[in-house]
Amino acid sequence: MQLRPFGRHPFTTSEIGFGAWAIGGSWGAQADTDSLAALHRALDLGVTFIDTAAGYGNGRSEKLIARVLRERAASGRSERIFVATKTPPAPGDWPPSPYDRAEDRFSETYLRENLATRCANLGVEKIDFLQLHTWTRAWNRNPIPFKILRQLQREGRIGLIGISTPEQDQNAVIDLMRGGWVDAVQVIYNLFDQEPAAELLDVAQECGVAVIVRVAFDEGALTGKFTAATTFAPDDFRAKYFAGDRLPRVLARVAAIQSDLAGSGYTLPQAALKWVLAHPAVSVVIPGIRNVAQAEANCAVSDLPAMPIALVHQLRRHHWRRGVWYAGK
Ligand SMILES: NC(=O)c1ccc[n+]([C@@H]2O[C@H](COP(=O)([O-])OP(=O)(O)OC[C@H]3O[C@@H](n4cnc5c(N)ncnc54)[C@H](OP(=O)(O)O)[C@@H]3O)[C@@H](O)[C@H]2O)c1
Image (cartoon, rainbow, N blue to C red; front, side, top):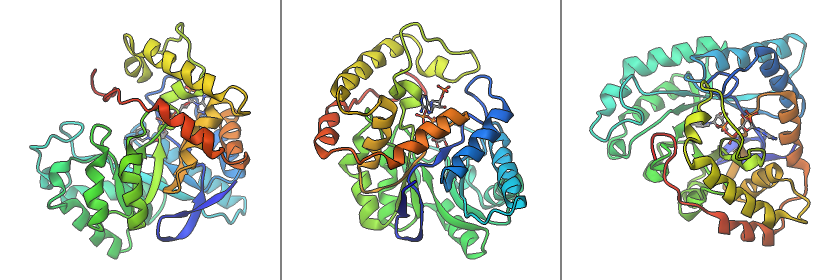
């Protein structure tokens, strides 16, 4: 497993991390035994970065991670695993509306209480990296929540602070990076959504802000395993994400990528991760992992040869500005 600098911060993380959304919920049936085994296997294979959130099963994902870290500490391992979690805005529109006030959605009382719950679920006194989940550009001119989070850092309750970008306006974090408000950002950057390459990734590098890349597989489409016959359980959010004509549209795009990969030696999931890692601003890519086989397949990608630059450039043609699929069409 290769390590990378975490922005300007004085430590490295594994370049493949563990995306811990599906082990919390919203992805159909998921057995905790599979999740625990997947976490252990990924850590055995050198993963040192795990991404979770309050919202992943209302603390289920955080508690599974805490259990695995406890078990490993009890077995005498001396490893440093960096755990990132997220605090959502207090109940209201998702993402926050531009008319919302930051003081209402991320008040100091709310942030302090939420942080205490994150610490309790993760079994720690201090959170390694707390991300706001999510944000509106309307708050950039007076980012009150980050003034409160900087205070919580000074109090020793949080290591690093940042944002998991609102998917409909990822560039909203650019001003915050330039203003020195965030230590790291989590962004969607994949073979389809290449927009962060226009500005966001370069600004992050200039500012020493670490970049965590999420959804490298476009929620599974970029693994190449979906077909026109694929269906999702009603409690799998992908039943909505790939609803209507979205699945056939994405399948046609995936087929075009696969024809570019013919003879490259990479499978599609390997290429999807290697292509993201080809950007020097990226500190860690966090594929979602639900079982031991996925932990092994995704961790193994780190030690494959870097993607040849000609192929990196060729795959840029698959950039697809399709709009936002989470909330509507
Ligand atoms: N707003 C936010 O902050 C936000 C939003 C989304 C994600 N995230 C974070 O980013 C992480 C990654 O995103 P994601 O999990 O949504 O999507 P993703 O990484 O694009 O896709 C993950 C899914 O692909 C399948 N998969 C994983 N490895 C595979 C492999 N080697 N071969 C075939 N299939 C494989 C698994 O689902 P199946 O086995 O069911 O196919 C897995 O759950 C999340 O876990 C979470 O930590 C954050």
